[in-house]
Length: 143
Image 1 (cartoon, one colour):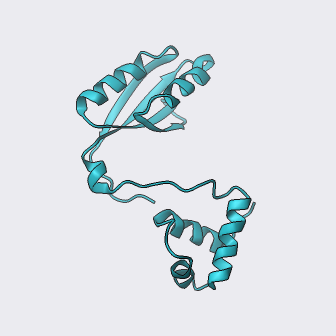
Image 2 (cartoon, rainbow, N blue to C red):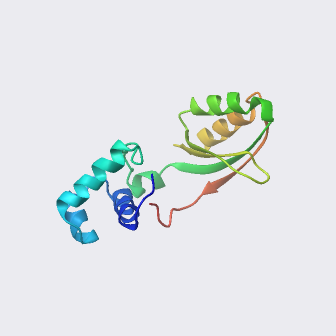
């Protein structure tokens, strides 16, 4: 599905606050409320909008330890590694990347000790060649 500039703008506003009233979104986009509602329904039907989620308050997240864990895997074992990482509650997201690493995991846990245990657990997975992690200090913005 090809998205129009209005669709892209609508998605951007929904990323900011998916619970914003349709009338408020319509005013910001300078469109009618019914046009915005029909665009949202079309984007949902077509699968562009796959669902809605909760974003936790930055103050709460700041209390947690967050890290990017870069992972190199043996190619034939990549599917098993991805599935094992999916089962780890501390791994919030997993991205495949190009370059020196194969995967980058976003890890979020309550304490440094928990992060240490999680990175050890990731490194011990069959198929993981090596890992490197970096702690996130703050989020400047998120969409």
